[in-house]
Image 1 (tube, rainbow, N blue to C red):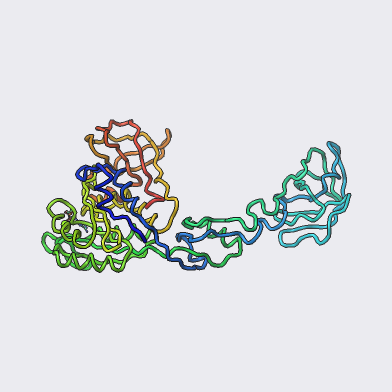
Image 2: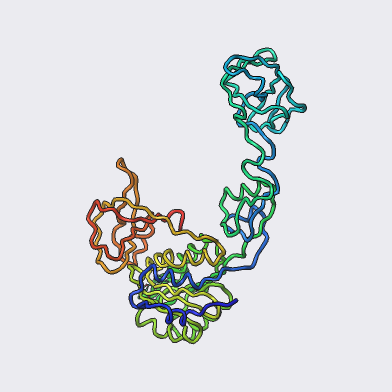
Length: 422
Ligand code: AMP
Ligand code: MG
């Protein structure tokens, strides 16, 4: 594969400032270097939920397979009906779902038919049972019926040979049902994206170890693990790595050898970044950005031995914000999903006063609620980048654009709903 190299591509073509990188610019740069997985697996339809189709699913049959009734009623020949007068027809038999009428409909006849029943040859119209009078093997039908009414035609949903689902689609429950409705037992999907991740920091201990004075529990690895699981990635948890150049180099090498993507948290802020920078220069091509955003200012992106690398900040909220603004879409693209649409956002009044200085994009954590006047959003309280509870209580990001200053209650703001994306 001919992969573009990151550093020359950036230095030739871009007048970007790595010390104040706008969010959309960083997203655009990352999107240029993503080469999706190509290996394919066959999976049973039951195991296909959340996987990405590697080929179109072609319908082997017409759906529906036969002309059938959309209503409970009577199948008739439209030519037998009177324009607006009444006509009485002989009920020749019945057509239930799964038990068709054996013959064909002759002039002067009707067939009792239930929803889903195969329309007998000769019939071209279904009259709802509410619109007839039935007695002693006969049925009396009034006027005003349209030829072809209440019929579902063979192939009107899908024709044999047409794609029912497209390559690049991530399968949802409706898609799983659709595949089953075609009688298809297995589909081709891309192999899962392999993502290795580790936390860096001398202060971190994992659950199960009692923290000593000054130590804290590592939460980022658990958040990252959970976010990756939601995206259907195969995860490789490499634990906590001490702030020691030798150990970090070793961890980067092992991660890049076994995964498509390497994600780390911590170690990219000023001061800490220096030795990581030297190391990554040695192992691959990595750019260090200060993104014009809050939280989540430092971010590293690049390649280590062919693996994609995202170096996220250490603060727990920054990890989540940078993951959703930069990493999520990249992982979906790398998984073979196409197209990866923009994450939906919409605008609602904000009931809280928000402090905000112009100059960078802010991602505050909000709670969207529906009241008598419609939807509105409030902030979750303290917004420090270390306060993970602000994320846990939130059901949306409140996105305040670069130029925005303080927000007074009642101002319309942009929100991005977390349910469905996280
Ligand atoms: P750093 O970017 O490594 O300087 O970390 C910034 C802040 O985030 C510090 O307060 C760290 O203790 C905290 N932090 C870093 N990594 C983690 C982690 N894995 N879990 C929880 N907090 C962390
Ligand atoms: Mg650190």
